[in-house]
Image 1 (cartoon, rainbow, N blue to C red):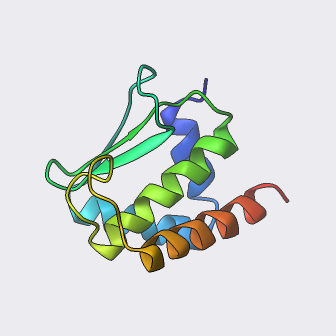
Image 2 (cartoon, rainbow, N blue to C red):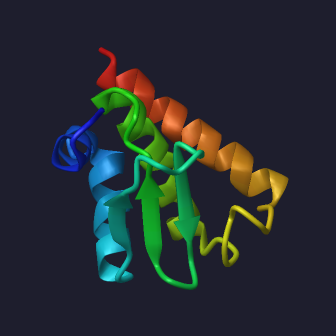
Amino acid sequence: MADLKEVISALQQTESGKVALEFASKAGVAIVTDPKKANPGSYDADNKIITLNARGSVVEDAVTLAHCLRYVQHGAPKDLSVQPVSLASERDANAFSARIESILKR
């Protein structure tokens, strides 16, 4: 189980991760963990909360966080668990998190 501070620290090792975290911070988005959640991560735009289940490794959870942060940058719809995002936004979030993963696994 990854510690949230370690996850954020790992993501801050990348320039893109720093930018995404700063954007979310300025937007007032909180990042929390809830190990009971089934999804690895989710973003609730109405409540401005990213929730990670934090059951993966630090790198896995950093990649999940990057994915969720990309939705913040796109101005994602309300609750992603009940309202799907556009295919373009999903592809972009996948590409963004894959880029973060490749950097962190070097």
